[in-house]
Length: 340
Image 1 (cartoon, rainbow, N blue to C red):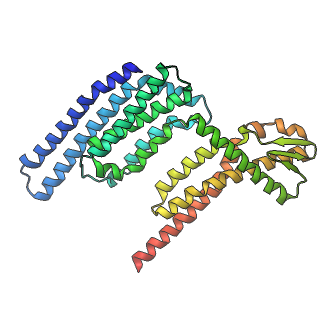
Image 2: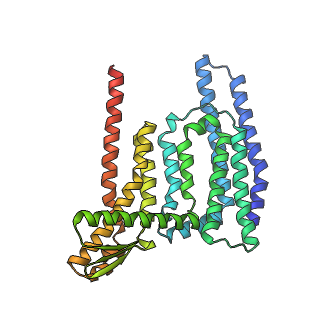
Image 3: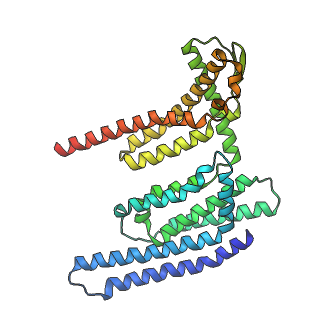
């Protein structure tokens, strides 16, 4: 890691020189060519500037990928071996796809943003040095938290490169795809524990409500439910934090792709939290009813230990219904404004 950090620091002057050369070429294109018309001149200059800056940015991303090669491989292996972080491997590809499909909407005013570049560059280097320093001093840093620092550093440095080569206005129009890279950072252990505890307690409340609605006889003591023939405890593993986190990411992505109104986007994402809690409570209800009416052995069946994907799929139905309703209202509002 110290070698990687040194290599990265040595690469920064080269990267800055690349950006300066791109800017010099852009200036030459703007002043030396004599096209047939001013409009054509501006168009050709903008196209040349955009293509050269894009090549410079992609070269920077390649250099960062080389510098972070071993940590990124470790992150991929770790993510594929865990439930809560398995989505990490596809996050960079989603960000790249979002930029590609919205490429014609991105602003072509490539204004260098030294402030944002410096802030993100400093944050990325600080995170990288913190990870290497804590490991070297044998600090109580878990492997998950170490990879969190590394992934955060990589995301910051990629974003800094965007401000360096593509400019402030281009990055503002591509803000969501770059901000989406934050989901390639594993959640720190402390955050995971807090979310699991909060989700467990909220799910117990939702399950109690469902048992009450169905008229199921139950005695509750905190997260313990005494049903006829069996006692169920809502454990940390039953918090559903993985599916809830993926549902949250899905709602963010869907709101960006299908909605334009900030209010409607906020409504869609905000309702994911109660939806996830109700889903967990409904899952506890189903397992409890099966244990009561079929037999206590149902607590050891697939529906308990491997039923998460099924209930996650069920939670997608109200999410997409809400998305359809919000999008329909947005289209109707837009149509009324055009006709009015």
